[in-house]
Image (cartoon, rainbow over the protein chains, first blue to last red):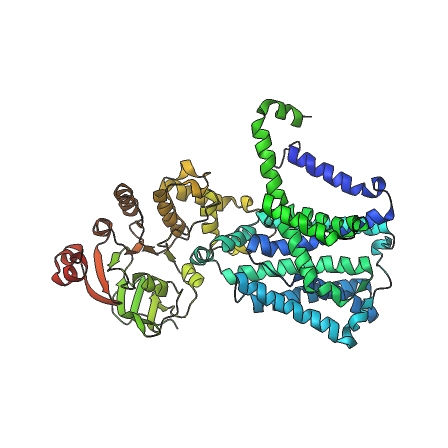
Length: 328
Length: 257
């Protein structure tokens, strides 16, 4: 399978990467390049949450707080005068460590219990960001005056920032693609579907969920760091429950437990939030209407729903013309 | 705490229960159960509904903590161990209600089961499909169990009887020394039950089996020793003939029909 690069799937991936790589050339204006950057780092965030929601069957409603903790850690380290490398490393560490604490506390239960504990932890972190003024600046937040310049590649302009985000995004997607097919990925889905059986087979269900949380926390921290460099500002608003709900909606709308779903979901939410909101004042209403439509028409998400429609479409037509279409 | 068995037997029992008790509040579900299973033994536990058979299994496998008493695997006290650690010691079980992965293929179910006891189950950076030796073992297991022709079928498309058999195949994947079968024939038709009995009798004779079952034909076919559980207590232990003719057993179990 690996040797055959001419399958429709590989062609589609190649076209998608080419389009993304050339995006600043065909997309008119800095504004839209910035929107694309936002979609990409929110997609990394949604991929991270999808590890828990889609593959572990654990729904977290406090992920924005972890995202925010990594962002705050970066901003605070920079404010203290450390360099970008140290700040990013510390932020990754703080992000994963916070997730570990989250996991130890919330993995005592699953289902509704897990949702409520993550919700509570998220609110605590939001409260801390809001009230611990000496550390976070409270409502004023923290400014990040400069973006880094890795290997002399200045990220200060929109196009360069987009390329760095694209690279991080692609690495995250590759990591996810391998993760899903790895023994650990199979074990994680097993604990989602049949935890008692997994236990009887010799799997330590708790530990598997814990490691999954750490992986999710790592992706979340990565996206949080990209976010704080993008906006060059962090305030408690980022950690709020609405942000957690938003990223959860990205995952659910796109299709939890699929590789592409969270990416599509991130695209949908960010476009409605930034681009469409320029034309329609009540964009929240529109976003709500879209979600209701998705829930009614494709309850398992846009990606699985579209795949099902596509298969039905292909089956209706005779297979021969479909084949000639795919050949060139 | 590796307390070696005090008896002078040359062989150590695979599984030994010493004075096992379990209470749920005021209800005594298991009372002073003693049991010894030697390598290759085929024992069965029968008893009316609510006698505490499944509770006993849950104590043996570590799903419930015991109230008092000991569980020993190869003479080693594992009473405080978690289930997955007991599996690593060579204990495997099946469930009364089928616990398979319905969305996965037969092969994937077995692969997951084999991976359970390997350190590489935590590997996130390599494809599962690159572990050739795990696949070889899966094919071997499927061939032995007669499932090789159906390996790519999704489990939800198998018949109930096939699912019950696959349930046992998953138990065998960890190379257990003792297999605990919780009503393997639950919900099977009489024809499927006979198939199941044949399937069980084909298993490796060195493997010890402890069986809970309602289907008396399977019990009398497979087990060489039967214990009767009543209100959490073992009333009587003996060969199938002894149990069959015991007036006490007939009174509480065979005769109550």
